[in-house]
Length: 356
Image (cartoon, rainbow, N blue to C red; front, side, top):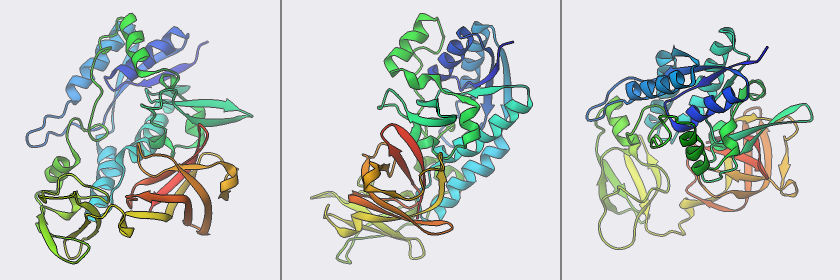
């Protein structure tokens, strides 16, 4: 009797091909559309209905069962509110990481298993490998599409119960394989924007949810007011676009004072407030129990933001039960509170924590 695999089908090419490949491998495949967000915002139509139709069309073409799981309330509470609270507090949260932790690899996994699934599968660009009776999360073959950064907070149980077949292929090959199989989503553009919300930028999303924000001063490193911002919550450390301060060298955001509603900037790319080699972390999560005290000798690298370059780790020390101190081999630019530091050893994801 073949294993029953519930595939999270978002209506995109990656999850469509995931379902096709698993069916070809002999699994009993059930497609599941997770209805996480259906709300329209001013000037932006949520694409969930189109995505649902695309996912269902592929499922019908593959002749597999198709279900809908309504997670909208949970998504609002565990992902959207997390994002909104973070920005209101002046930090830069990562909703995709929380979505994977709370929705895809917790709520979806638990729902699917209780519904009769043996495993779940997603179209993530990452790999799950079993070695020495342990499951490891690895980077995708296509490093340009690699999503392992967003997956570091899933559990060992989730790794054991999940498939991520797309991580073995380059994106152009994924499209070709989907085309060869006649999948209707083969040439569909990749989704942009916030997790499941659609093609909407974070600023527009925040305005839609929280309303227009009070304007305030933009102050440079000499204490001079050099401009006016339209809401401190919209700015993140290292940002250089969207400041609307004309003339000369670009300004970079170096900090924010939410109580005084001030955004601080500098034109000096070497400004000490833009660079750091000491970073405090909290809420650490390890995918393996063997790595607790890292040092330079272990060839450990860390990524401090999605698509940021990997930086060498000098050492990582636990300060108390929920606080860690990371020391880098070199200074990193624009380290933003609320983002994640994710640790790698070659292509293996070790775990990570939240920058605070």
